[in-house]
Structure formats: structure tokens, C-alpha cells
Image 1: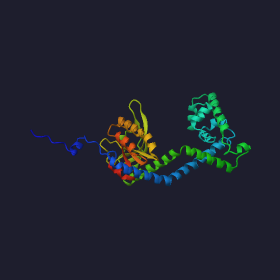
Image 2: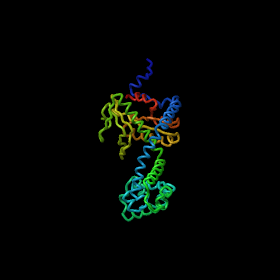
Image 3: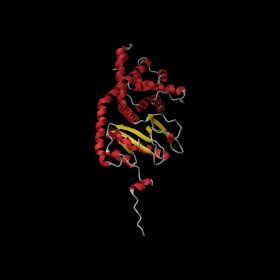
Image 4: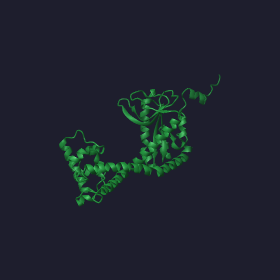
Length: 336
């Protein structure tokens, strides 16, 4: 009886039994050097550009603070009517106190509606709250804010006079610094993400790809070949549909057999601890995508910064691959 030939790697791949080629997830011997290179790259960017990003945000925030001061008659007219007309001023007003108040601290001190405060943090009022209850809550918030105002940076309050332009500018800058410090990490992360998307876009443009929005509601498999889009919402789920954002969606010039585009999530991090806290986010996302589009969906990470072996091992175990920013040409291995 003739001995059966052992199937070759080529024949297994032809029959669809070979797992897809991995870029970095199956090469742990390279991780240490890549992590070091990625950390160096992030640190270089941070030292050069993060202060600029922070200052730019502070300039815009200072203007918002000035607007809040003017709306409240330089904090001398803090009452329910003023807050009702200017709900978006609340984040600024929380930073005008000594000490500055976190959202939950303000809710506790004022015994105010947490949902109302949450709405005001987003610049709106609680739509379903009755007018009497709304005024009652706003009044309690105003009493707490007025009692805790940091009079050292608003000297005109004790002097009972109008502030000079210099006094208002100085106070606005101080409050803007407090606001920016409270969200310093997101400011840096957002600036880095914008830079990463720009880098991917330029890489694709050089290879003849076109940035083009994919029509909402049109099947993802019908995305035009040779195009890409940023920040696309994809509907996932069976019984309950939810939209999840994907940073970069690319349909190769030669589409894959399932015609699903390449999905890329841009990730940056300035410390190792934060990435380990957030690593489950990507795992959840790929499970949602696979449940909707099938196991063959191509979802990869674009990494820059402090992503250590613990993080990489977790993502690899979840079936997630990645491309390092310092080796962006590895995107070619995705068929681009």
C-alpha cells in the first residue's frame, strides 16, 4: 500500500488550513528591541511636540475661560439663571475654586443631581428635569461655587470693583492651566493619535491610495479598492446593533478574498502602567468585529510608545497583531 504523502505547507495554505501570516505577534524574540525603539521614539516626540500641543490647547482653553468669566459678570453673578443660560461654563467654574473641584466632589458638596452635572459638563441641561427642580439644583451648585471661589486669583471680588484687562487675563490663564492639567494625558494622547493618523495617511498616499469616505449603510465589502478612511463607525452586534469607531479602514488595491478592508487602531502610550489597564479594550473590539464580520477580519494595532511584553503577550493571545510606528513599512505585509 502506497504511503500517503504528508501535506506540504504550500498545500495546507492552498486548502485554507494555514493560519494567516503574523507580522509581529508570533515573534517574541523581537519584542524587547522593538519596545525599546518604540519608547525612544515616543520620548523624542514628547520632548519636541507635547509642550506645543499643551500650549495650543491652553490658548483655546483660556478663551473659553474668559467667555465664562464674562458670562458670569466676572464671577459676581453666579446664580441659577446664569448657569441655566451658560451650562457649558461649569467645568471652568469648578476650576475657579480653592481647591479646584472634581465633578463627584461638587455633586457631593452641593447634594445636586449627578445626571444634571454630567449634562452640564457636556454643555447642556438635563432635558427632562422640571424647571423648579432644575433651579433648585442650580442654586445649590452656585452656593457651593460662590463660597469656595479662589479669591487670590480673582482679587476684584474682595475689592468690589471691575477687574482690569490684565487681572482678567491673568486669572483666565491660571484657570486654563488648571483645566489643562486635569486633562493633560488626553491632550497628549489626542495629539499623538492625530500624528499617527497623518503618518499612515501619508504612507498610503505615496502608494497611490485615496482618502475617501465610505457611504454609511453601504456594506463594508463594497468599499472601493485603493481607498482609505479615518474614524469610521462600524455597526457590530446581532440582536442589538452598536457602532464602534475604527481609526483607519483601508481597502487594498487588490481586495482580500472576503473583500473586507484592513482595520487599524492607532495606539500610543506614555507609560507602561496605562497600557496594561487599557489592553482589554482591543480584545473586546476584535471579538465584536469577528462576531459580526467573521473570524477572517483583519484588525491590527499601530503602536508607538510604552507597550511592554505583558501588553504584547496579552494582545497576541487574543489573536491581535500589530505594526510598530518605527517600522511603518511593515504595513506592506498586510497586502497594501
